Length: 104
Image 1 (cartoon, helix red, strand yellow):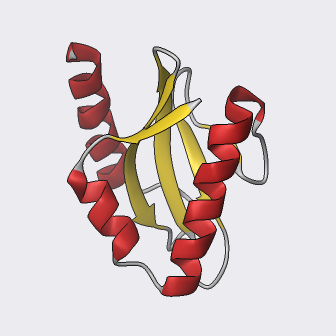
Image 2: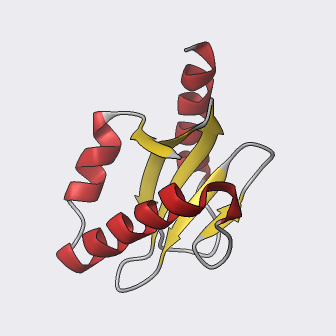
């Protein structure tokens, strides 16, 4: 499956991570591209009916939200995880982007 970034903001977020974390993000995206729906824990986790998170572990804990749309994987939003729960602010942002994708 083809993987697409929703916007430049997410690409900038990835570029600003530590080099070792960037390598892990790239690897996780490659796994997602190759395995698609079959990619599971510890790399991917279902958050809701349509929303999934790509889980990057290491010095920086990174989460990248994504959806499947028209035989593509759309990476919506990413953040550095600092607590056990997904912050409301991050969920609000990803839901706004999800609504924008639905309008396309």
